[in-house]
Image (cartoon, rainbow, N blue to C red; front, side):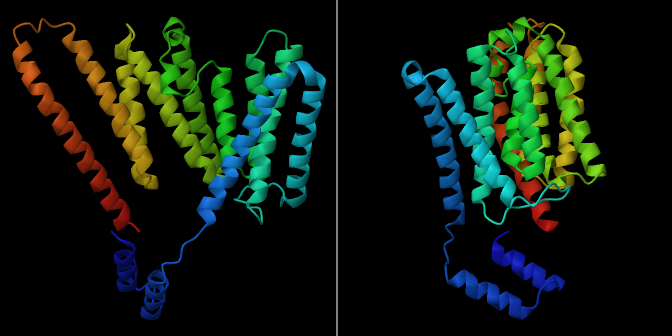
Length: 328
């Protein structure tokens, strides 16, 4: 459904008047181009480049500048970022609170990233926590959670959850997750599932208490990917039957959730994780069957199976989008 069709349907339902429709059409005809998204992207890119530059500066000049000087500079810049952010912040609120200018959001982000760099560098150089490097991830998570909730920063919240998963030993990245260490330490799979459940329970509690309800989608996203990857890793283990039930339960939950909050990304990844899980289960079952006599038949069916899967996947997404647009 296009914007024009949505406006027309709103007019038919009586939500807007014909004069408002005319104003919308006049606005659309001007082809006004907004630079807001592009400027925000450039600001985000500048933060990434700045923090990356700090890392390169440390690496290339560590022998000449000295550890104490570098730590001092990072600390000073971090304090300055939070000083100006606190001056412009409206204070903590359970509801969504925005800065008057998005510049301060990026100051908060810069300060949070530098604070994590400071803690990690301090531990690496002086080992204030001994040899426990996981403690750095926990401290970084605590800092980022506090900053995210005070300044209402979703990006910093994502950093906090990522640090929390790193604390238990999991990196939410498909290329790193399926490293051999995960299979050597299968308890990480259970830790990941427990953490994903904790995130979902926290969302339930937050929504009941009206505490930053707009953070819910961030938690849902991390919980979905964390549980999905852990279940897939569990399905390739010897005790894979247990994770079949986990897969059914988790995917059903996110399937219902995606329809309830009308979020297409949750729906798409639910289909993907379910599809991968089903195929792994089929492969595990076939491994216990002598398919020598049926090899030719299976080889002929496989292409049609994948084509049908793609068609059904596209059809499911289109139907979801239609229902979402119809509910607007």
